[in-house]
Image (cartoon, rainbow, N blue to C red; front, side, top):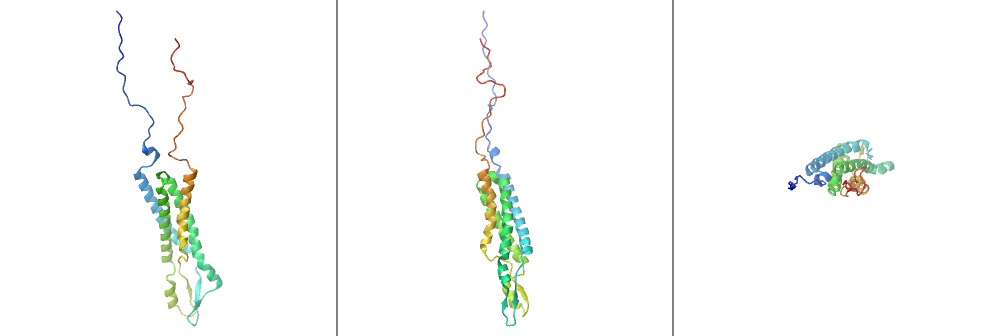
Length: 210
């Protein structure tokens, strides 16, 4: 009498498949928050350092008080009035590029909020640089001129003559972000599927002929 064999229960196990967890493509919000806080702290530090550098590099022109109580300066002095704005823009370009590069390297995968974070941090650094420079400068020009005596040389106030210089900082901060997002690989693009194992012929099933 032939013995009938019945197949046993198939072994159950977790089905293998590609993992598509959100954490593999985008950083966690906790890590992004920490990186964002460090970026803001870096911007504040660079803003203070930029203010000190702005004060040290800017050569302020002076007015000479005359015997009649009036004050005048030379043509070169008039040309140097905008020298402070020029140095402020140069410092802002360097700091803005640095902040934008750090923002893209650390927070590029969070998406569009990195643009707001980079430009906002750069704008905050610009305002802080302006405040520190004015504090280190000689002070308000009108009050010092009123207290000066004939023959005294009164340097002008260290401030921005054109408020548009503040926009240089966030403008240069957004450049690395835009270049990185345009030239870099998109993290959401599907990766190419892995090919068959080496040495396996296409179409072979591994069953012997019979």
